[in-house]
Image (cartoon, rainbow, N blue to C red; front, side):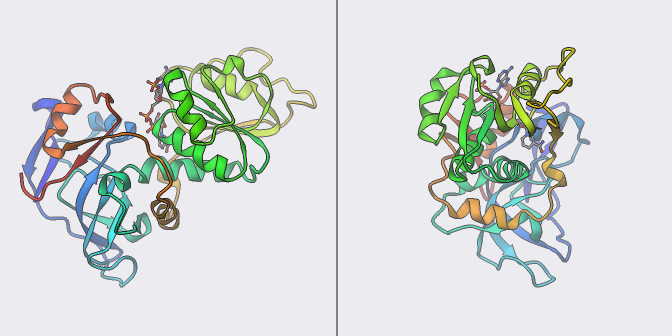
Length: 307
Ligand SMILES: NC(=O)c1ccc[n+]([C@@H]2O[C@H](COP(=O)([O-])OP(=O)(O)OC[C@H]3O[C@@H](n4cnc5c(N)ncnc54)[C@H](OP(=O)(O)O)[C@@H]3O)[C@@H](O)[C@H]2O)c1
């Protein structure tokens, strides 16, 4: 089979190579990969991987062979999957049953490929905020892939959703997705919130913490700004309105058994992942070499059966 492998001397540091077929373990199934949509984490991890290794965490495809232990999807099922051990930018891959879900056959490969990392991160992070019905929940970086799913799921769960996105061109869309308030910056959010998910970090995280009500939490899920966090004196000096607030980190790789969540997310055709920019996977290295731009939507790569 063919796969994109780490090749430091090549365009984008990747080359499409003939590689060995995957060898699934007993709890893994073999999948014909149909599409994948690179995540910021996939791209950040490229520089740390050994030459010859195959990057890529998640995607969508058809089951070629079920797991030898008899569990999970059957041959021919359409699935979405996630494996942080990488190996995803390939024609075929092995994935653990616990990180795979059967998708409705009518769902497009491109749509399914966008869901695993962003949508399960949004769902699991919202669960950590516990009951959000009727509560003010803030999504910082709401225009991101994780953010727009978090807005939709929080609205469905009955929250009063406060979306923060620096690009005002996204504000109408965020309202359509269920946001009750939309802000370009945290400076205009004036009422305290019950919980927050921050995708940006840096000053955004500092400001999000300052907006928490007593006993509530901000989940520092993303760090897209790549900036330090400096908390001023007084940030952690509490009174009755600000006691017991917390910041917690999040790592999808520590979340186990995402099958049920992926099945729920894949079955919901109303979940809106936004515009997609569908390309042939043969153009992956060129896109990475250009700095992985997002011009007309989230890039999704369709995997061809032969080069
Ligand atoms: N902890 C985990 O397990 C986990 C899981 C999933 C994702 N993540 C992280 O979560 C973050 C979001 O992921 P994603 O896939 O949703 O990313 P994405 O779709 O690439 O979106 C990134 C967002 O960050 C915004 N942004 C970048 N720099 C900014 C800045 N300086 N100020 C304000 N906004 C800024 C961008 O805004 P514009 O559109 O205006 O440029 C864009 O909306 C990433 O850091 C990712 O690595 C972590």
